[in-house]
Length: 354
Ligand code: NAD
Ligand code: WQD
Image 1 (cartoon, rainbow, N blue to C red):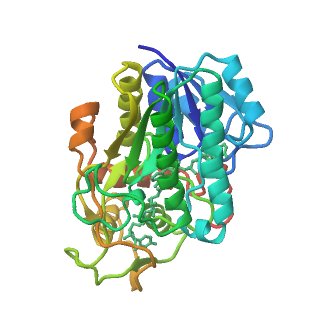
Image 2 (cartoon, rainbow, N blue to C red):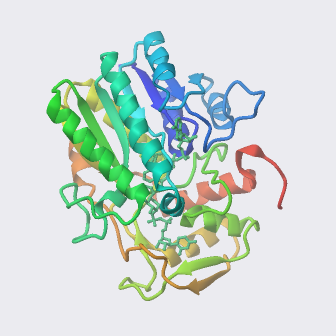
Image 3 (spheres, rainbow, N blue to C red):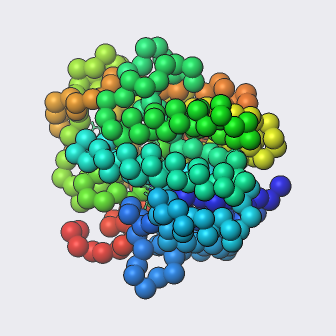
């Protein structure tokens, strides 16, 4: 059934891939983004990522350059379009930056979400999909992580902003039975659309492993620092549950369908992961196969706040959403490499430092 879906942060990494999948199956997408972490040429009507989604799908979104904290502007969007569901991606997401700028993170991620929820309620829209994170689990007490694992033991303001927002959503659902909220806890999204036309485009030096490896592979960065090789894992390096971005995007389609079917009431959580854990060195080896050459790396001290291992239980999402990740590590690395090779400088295309 076709829906009118509002996507916040739709020009970003996960948002743009989800927009593509939504357009493919015939939904109408209204997309807002303030451009704080996406590339928009001053003269262009659409952010570059969205332009490419248009080329790939032959379909168009309705786009507004709006900040989620701007209540009036948001309200106008809701007045103009009859919205069935909102999928909320817009947030700041850099862990290190959040320790330097906690107020900016709380303002953007928590106040921003509260404003959005208020405007939704004012306009009678109560179906909401939230971009949460495995970071809300903190240091795992057991593995695989099931959705009922305790949350809140986060070590940085970014993680706390995700946890606090989940708590706000729980309170909201308890206060008003009209709300139907699915919180999706993403594990480690990587890769890109198989076309290599859209992908992850971090500002400056990447914080996350996969974009770092990609930039070493393409020659933009010299050497990967492996943060610790003395963890209790199969090779001593940190283990994570990497999930292909297209699988993750499809998880949102399943969540939106479930909301629309009337099958959800109140606050419900699902993990979006594969259930498999790979180490840093597993990722390096597999990426080398995809790009055809070695990735130079050196062992460095542990990164503060890191945990040894983290991977999802996928049972609940399989059973209740009918969704399961399909793509393996080879596709994650092949597709990440295709994007990086085709777009060494991301969406801006500037040939500054190659
Ligand atoms: P991203 O930075 O690529 O995309 C976020 C988009 O939101 C950007 O285009 C940015 O310009 C926009 N934005 C930010 N603040 C805004 C505001 N106030 N108003 C309007 N637009 C705004 O990030 P992403 O990786 O696509 O992440 C999307 C969501 O998923 C975030 O909520 C993030 O916390 C969550 N998440 C991401 C990961 C990950 O590893 N990428 C993991 C778990 C959860
Ligand atoms: C993965 C592994 C590192 C970089 C972070 C956020 C989390 C979520 C996803 C949004 C770890 C190691 C990394 C490098 C390395 N984001 N590593 N050298 O830490 O699992 O999660 O991103 O919600 O909130 O904390 O992902 O990609 O940063 O690290 O050795 O240059 O790679 O130590 O073991 P992480 P990551």
